[in-house]
Amino acid sequence: METKDKGPLAGVRVIDIGTMVAGPVAATLFADLGADVIKIEQPRGGDALRHIGPMVEGESLWWNVEARNKKSVTLDLHHPEGQRILKELLKDADVLVENFRPGILNKWNLSWEHLKKVNPRLVMLSVSGYGQTGPYASRAGYDRIALAMGGTLNATGYPDRAPVKLGTAMADYSTAVLGAFGTMVALYHRDMQGGAGQQIDLSLYETVFRFTDVMVTAYEKMGLPRERTGNLHFAAAPGDHFETCDGRYIVLTVSNDRMYGRLCEAIPALIGDERFSSHAKRTARVEEVNEIVAEWIKSLPVLEACRILEEKGLAYSLIYSIKDIVADPHYQARGSIATVEHPQIGELKMPAVQPRFSGTPAPQIRPAPALGAHTDEILRELVGLSVGQIAELRQAGTV
Image 1 (cartoon, one colour):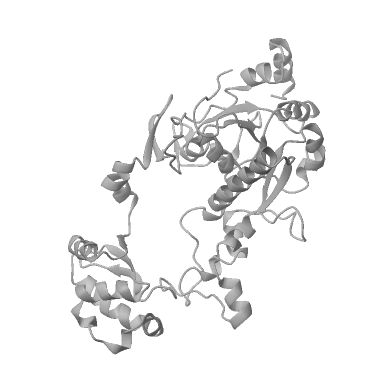
Image 2 (cartoon, helix red, strand yellow; image 1 turned 90 degrees about the vertical axis):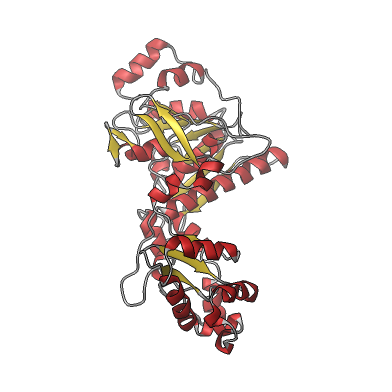
């Protein structure tokens, strides 16, 4: 069987039985860095992400980004024989990633209690909306649901209108990152500290909640609720999304007196104004200082505003569209966008592998697999089934 012999995670085997984003992307992060990731999919239709657009010639572009570097095996886990085969695959695996609703795997005899007997060294990452325990454990949970319960949605948008969702699936993706981190911690504990395998219980809502900085602390200690404030933030004064005279928007954040001094060099109207002489004063009058900055930026075309802010060493950015991203020289210089050659639909641009390692670079990205492309190979070489046995399983609908 072909193995990946490059990348810092070469030699780690991950079995991914998850669906959609949060669980499977944790496995993708492993695959990007050289782990051997085997994606288990239902024989009929495969992962739901395969059917979510945008589509090109019947191929989901989202699927092709997030299933890259994996191998696809079809296996119906509703069938007892499918469950048996999965257990065979897990005997020599390092990691199992799943994001079924709690209780489902137990019905299939694939819960942690079952699987740790199959492989005591197994690390099982269980991702769910609300966690494996608690009164909400059995509820369905998705990205936006987690953003709502985790406290982010209530703090996003303007106070005079309904909360606004984020533009990308940040609950799913941050959970994937935390899941990959937790899995590496468990592998380190197992391999470097003489520990055993273990299950990792990771919920979408708790991931979102973990990244709400001091929200709960400030509420409990000072009675300060986090509310919707539009583009204002207590650590940025001035700070907003400022429009230029040619209709572009620039993000500018000034969070200390040193940076404010540099801004004053660009905007003489701010020099010597005692109302804004400290960060605390500016925070108390943030709308007033923002108004002065907004008037200055509105008087300039975007290139001139960016030039001045760059010269002064201020923290700013043009608010990029995807058109800006693909044309930007910094993205190009760092290779932030990778090109993957798909056998059916040609070149696909997508985010490159992150993070970067100086000594163990990631291997070249392989395109996402066709449904079941590696079924026969994996079942022959890892489970030991014959061609005839695989044909019987296919006839029965198990693979």
